[in-house]
Length: 125
Image: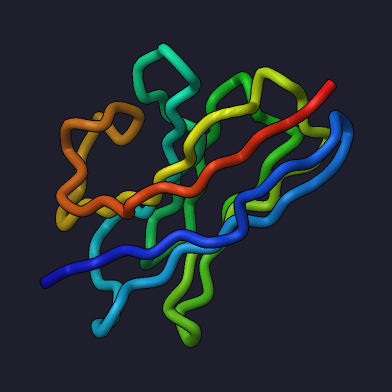
């Protein structure tokens, strides 16, 4: 069974930083895109950032551009999301996701085949 496991969430003050990690349990990540989505309280899931596993191309939501960095470590089989200058509006459950194949729609949840259970990020003002 494919499992993605997130870690690194927590409570941080505005302006602070967090580093989220995602790993694949019991297998090697071999999909095309690895992404981070988030779901703020009472809102729909939204795209944060994505990286192509093979080449390493990255794309970001405008709301986090310049504050977040997505990276991958093929040897460690992990994807990380470094988040800086956090704002209260960044508060959400953050999910890691993977597509098996290329998609134009990497910014939407539908093409993703595998999801983690989510990790809570809370930013206090």
